[in-house]
Length: 237
Image (cartoon, helix red, strand yellow):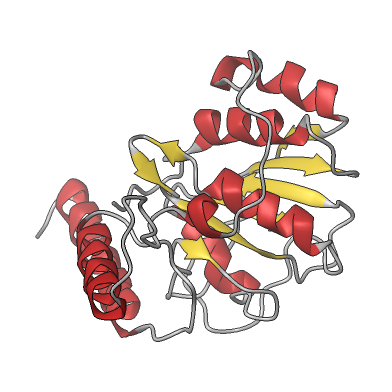
């Protein structure tokens, strides 16, 4: 008879295998930031297009840098944009930073009613939402993006009706390099849970809620990202 530890490891391996299978089969339409090897491929395509059109120029127009094409300018990181400065950064921006009890981690295929808004933990769909930027109207179901929180992701979300300029600024923030990668373990989408905030960032059992958008929100989100990225109960690269 297998020991408790062996049984625990078997169940964990089975859970990871199920998630990998679900993720591989997910075909949700999305607009992901192109990173790593995809950047090289995109650069080659751009070079080819330039040669075909007989245009010249040395600037990098690859889709790896959203800001280089249509992202709106935002303030640079300030002294509060650090993990240990989150309380001060949140206060300066007029936001609240909260920690909530975990609501569960089971895989379900039914609708889940979460105790926090936006959701920060709980039972979730077996298929996690993928990292990247989602256009308004294409937000993953909450049961899918809660699964992503379990994997240590940061989810930045904005209220429906948010001005396009603000959304573009948030895309610029998303496109900042973190851990050496653009959009590292992060999602940006329009909120669909009628949250009481203009802007919110969530991690597993954590939330940053901002009633109003202002320039200090950027550092609050940066501090939240620095503090909680990859801090979920499961690490998935």
